Image (cartoon, rainbow, N blue to C red):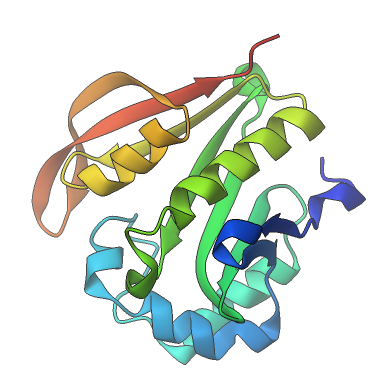
Length: 181
């Protein structure tokens, strides 16, 4: 599905940041920024906590072999400080894709996540046969919901008791952005 365009470097000049492909050299920064319970509590259980060097190396190996989906490092101050990805769907959902992201805590509240979501959304709509991008956030994570809203996503549904996390059952929120044809 991916073509050579899919290893883009996308500039975020206002933040002196960019989105770029992951590199094995990112392992130390990945451990530094990903090893945070406040991040892990808002992501799927496949995102480990604590986040170790072995976890970073495993993830970077997966990214090196990635052929189908888009996974980019969010780079600021010369380091990979977060991640943004798009998972392209198949079959009857082949024109839909799911977007996900996380950002290191020192970079929260600066608009960087919103800018990254906007940039990737525009990129996907321009370069792929996708008419719908969506994201699911835990109801207990209003900051992430706000990122999506500021990036032009609209709340479509409250999914009651749809997530099991840390022995609790949570509601989640479904947001979507539709490509205007």
